[in-house]
Amino acid sequence: MDIITGAKQKVLTGGRLDAAEALALYQHSDLLELASLARSVKERKSGHSVYFNVNRHINLTNICGSRCPLCAFGCDADSEGAFILDKKDVQSLASQAADDAPDLTEIHMVSALHPDKPFDFYLDIVATVKEVLPKVHLKAFTPVEIVHFAKKSGQNYHQVLQQLKKAGLDSLPGGGAEILDDSIRKIICPNKATTNEWIEVIITAHKLGIPTNATMLYGHIETIEQRINHLITLREIQDQTQGFQAFVAFPFHPGNTGFSNLTRVSSWEDLKMIALARLILDNVDHIKAFWMMLTMPIAQLALAFGADDLDGTVVEEKIIHAAGAETKKGITKAEIVELISETGYTPVERDTFYKPVGILG
Ligand code: SF4
Image 1 (cartoon, helix red, strand yellow):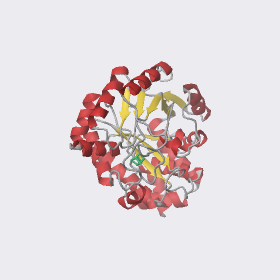
Image 2 (cartoon, rainbow, N blue to C red):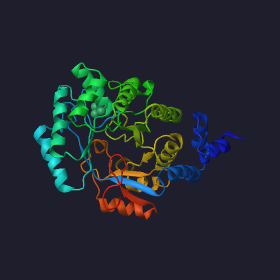
Image 3 (cartoon, protein in one colour):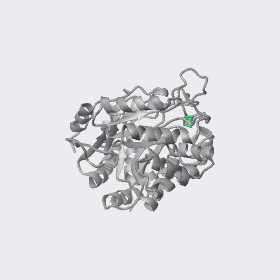
Image 4 (tube, rainbow, N blue to C red):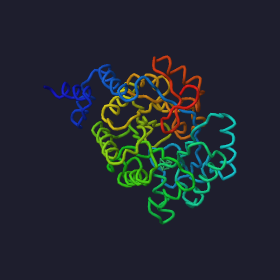
């Protein structure tokens, strides 16, 4: 039996793909056949449901000591457009979020690595969000930020995460993974968390009962083999901890970055990546098509390629738009419901743990 036929049989019978099989499927499968395989896995895991939530993004600062070549968001303190929110700003944003959306279930908060703010500042911000929105889930800080807090405070990851959890942190979004390969990280983000640091924070969080998402940034200087190794690394972590709730693949937007000579990958490749992730990550329940990065038409199509989550209403996203994303900065619940219904799947409003909520649950 040839490698592709064997790989397809494995997928259809719930087997696990190895790196060579995944590569063969990626390189030699017909796109629609790949979609059909990924959809069979999606439907085994979440039936006809497609999830979304009502969330709000908050970015505390864009002032960053790391200045990664891949990033269009981080800047110096004296750059035009530099900002840092204080406790009062966060209080008012959180209140505003609840006024705008009484059915809000999640605040998503990630930021640049401010060179001067002490760890206590972030603990205070977490407590502030929870004071204003005690029932709303707070998903905040990438592993890269946790490594930064640990360095700033002289504490280990366990201590940092434990204090954040005590202050009200509920989960981590899992960003900053980019490609988990230091030969790539040295070029695209040489001053931020290494592969091992990212992994150690994730495993520590999972052991503390703090769930996370798993992410990947693709479409810059990495090879397909490195993407597949990245996905297999995530799968190995999940075998060990079961702490990943969902996987999110972000296509790289080169605009305004140190790689503005590159071209954003095609939608063909976006869809193949969604399908490949669904096929490799057999132990991760949900694959998110993050519409803000993909554009809504591609995210909607991704539902036929194994994705089962469109993310949320978002509101006020800044990081991706700094790199030139032309998507809207937010969307209404009614719009998401309509877009999912159009695909024939059933829209399910969820909380961060994928528990159905609201009238659509
Ligand atoms: S990717 Fe993160 S750490 Fe790097 S410059 Fe941007 S905000 Fe800073």
